[in-house]
Each structure stands twice: as structure tokens, then as C-alpha cells.
Length: 114
Figure (cartoon, rainbow, N blue to C red):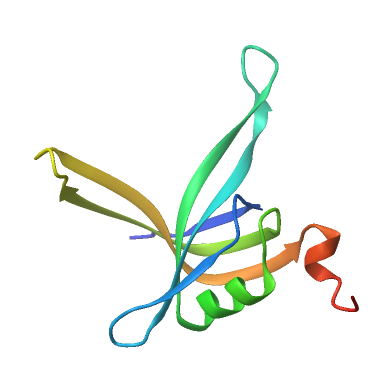
């Protein structure tokens, strides 16, 4: 079986770093990934893909990246479900990152000489 995903996109907001009760670093980020074709209206659609980062990958991404940064994520798709407060079953699909590459972004993010 193969479960591997490669994405390149822009962060929709600054990564927020959290720590679990046992001290593991974790960050949830959303990547805006443009499709490679135009829709029937001639516009390019964008998918917003939720990714979960763990440990050093989460810490480094939160430290070096900001909203608008372009990153590459390699990982796997994971699904889970839960019951919400209304008693309805909610299904979630997300990417669990195994590696992240910082590929560029807004000039202010990378200018450390200010």
C-alpha cells in the first residue's frame, strides 16, 4: 500500500505552535494550493489543505515561516471522525507532515537584517 502526498503552497496564516501534555510540539497549518487548470469560468481554483506538523518540524516551521510563506510538505493522508455537540458524526481528512521544505515567501519573512 502507498499513502504519500507532496504539496507546495502558501500558508494561509502564521503557524501556531502548541505543546501536548507530554511536551510534544504540534502545529496545525493550512496550505493554499492553486490547481493547475482553469474552471469553466476561466478562473484558477484554490484548495485549502489542512496539515498537522509534529516535533522539530512544527517548531522550525513556526519559527521561520509566516502567512504567505511558500512551503513544501511531504507526508501522508490521515482520516479521523468524531461526534460533534449536536450528535452528528464529523469526518476530517488531513495531511500528517513527515518533512517540510521552506521554499520562499514574502521578503519580510526572510529579511533578518532589520
